[in-house]
Amino acid sequence: MTSPFLLRIASYVAVLTGLLFCERVAPFAAPEQRKPFRVRFHVGISIANSLILYLLISWPTFTALTYAQGHNIGLSRVLGLSGWREIVATVIVFDLWDYGMHLANHRIGLLWRFHKAHHSDMEIDVTTASRFHIGELIISGGVKCLVILLWGPSLWGLVAFDMLLTTFSQFHHSNVAIPLGIQDTLERVIVTPRMHRCHHSLHRECYVANFSAIFSVWDRIFRSHHRARGVDELERVGLVKPRGEETMRLRAFLLTPFVKG
Ligand SMILES: [Zn+2]
Image (cartoon, rainbow, N blue to C red; front, side, top):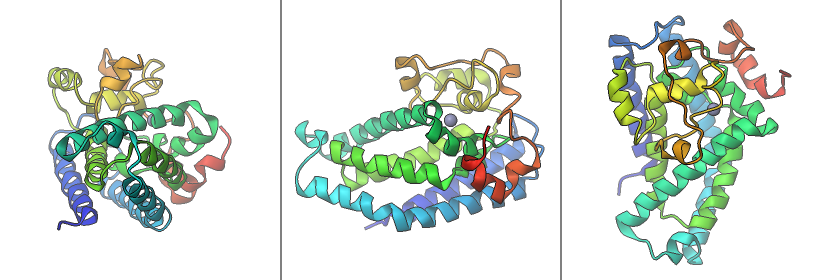
C-alpha cells in the first residue's frame, strides 16, 4: 500500500520544482529577493513545522479519525457515503471548513496575530505556500480534529484533501504569468494566482477578499470575492508593517504574533 506520508512529500517536491521552473521562465512580478534564499527560508520553516505537527497533531488527528470510524459517527456516515463519493464530498466539506478557518484568521485578533506571519511576506511566490507560523498550524490542526469527528471522513478522503490543499496553495501563491483571460476562466471553479495575490495585496478592496483555497465558489457564495480590475491592484503585497529585511529573519518571523501592530 502506498504511504500517504511519502505521497504527500513527493507531491510537494514535484509541484514546488515545477512551479519554481515556471516562475523562472515566466514570472508575473519581477522578483527582488534572491530565489535560493527564499526557498531555503520557507522550505526550512515548512520542514520544522511538519516535524512539530507530526509530534503534536498526528496522534490526535489519527485518534479522531479512528474514533469516528470505530463508533460509526459523522455526517458522511449518516448520508451513507462511501468509495469515491465520500472522497469527493470530504474534499468539498474540508475546503469549506478551510475557507471558514481562513476567514476567522483575518477576523479574530488572536488568530490574526499568527496568520500575520504568512502575510508579512513582501513577495508572493510558490515558496510563500510554505510560510506559516507553527501556532496557526497547531490551532487549525486542533479545530480540524473536531471537524473530523463531525464529518467522519475516511483516511483516503482526508489524504486527498490534504494533498489537494497543499498543491492548490502552491499553485495559487505562485508568481507565474498566466494570461489573465485564462485565469478568468479558471477562477470560475478554482482559486488562481491572480485571485490569491489579490488577497495578499495592500489594495483596500483586495486584502478583505478571496479567502478560498481550492474551489473559488465559497468566496462567491459568501460574497467575499473580489476580481482585481487592474494589475496596479496586485502590485504592492505584504503588510504595512513590518516591511524590509526583518520579514525574512527567522527570529522576527517567529515573534510576529507577540509584536504589537
Ligand atoms: Zn490570509
